Length: 283
Image (tube, rainbow, N blue to C red; front, side, top):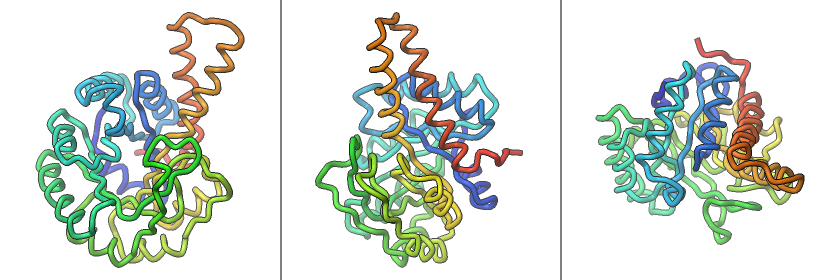
């Protein structure tokens, strides 16, 4: 079933675990993510990034997610990820997306707040949840989000408090040292900063750049208030590498290759669901 993510995140916050948000951009990724949630008996957030509109339309993404979610009892949230275009955000709401992320992190604080307030008013009237972002992530290896010119800008705790209170946003993505893509070395997470943000902000907190994080780092982030973690690059890397290996052994029928790729996506999604607290059962 398709749902917005508010109830799932509030439950995760109360029980101290995280919900996985996995990026999908074709049938294989959508199917693998939804199947992972079903097999782990956990809610999943199916994140469709605005940059993947070249792969499929918002209408197609919604129709596919609705069909797949109808096949299982576990909650699935179709979420528009990293969108800086307000008109696209409104289109996603009209199409039927359960959740939208307006990314105004590159804007001055006041402008980001103003735009997010307007989007929250429209989205909440349609029972759609809203995520926003403060701060900026740098780009790591094999990143498909942001650009190589991105420079990390940590989230200011006082600004986060002001932003959350002023906008009524349902989830806030923060920058504490993670990157989009894979890490070039050992990540240096600012858990001290996360603790300060958590103390001031009651809104559920989101961590982008989860691909490649060590299990202990994930546990530490969850222990200090993160309730939603995004995974994109590792799914892509694993699926491509396994596909290359398979093609090196022969030429399977395209339909068979598609089925195998669903499995490759599912492997990574299930791995992270377990890290995020997969032992927690939704009752």
